Length: 102
Image (cartoon, rainbow, N blue to C red):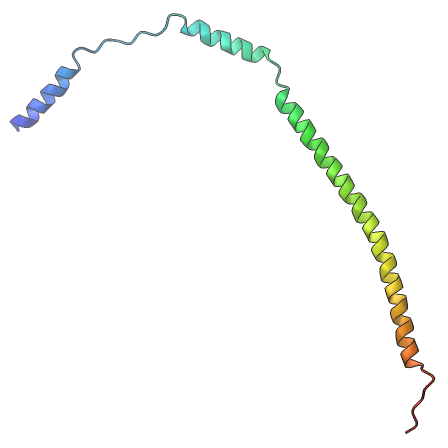
């Protein structure tokens, strides 16, 4: 118990030399100056980036759409040719001139 009291007294005695901290006398002026310069500076850096990203994405979507339309037209013509040749193949095999006599 006595050892605990000594420990508490040592802690309290360590606080005796503490003084109140003093701030820099020009701190308030520095903060006001920074706030006023920040408000005066235009905020165009973020806006320019948003505009560029939007423009690039729009261009990519347009180019992608053009490729899809072009690809669909060529695919449709290939499918039509494939379908026509398939019909000709089946009809050629079905209506062969060789007939089997049973």
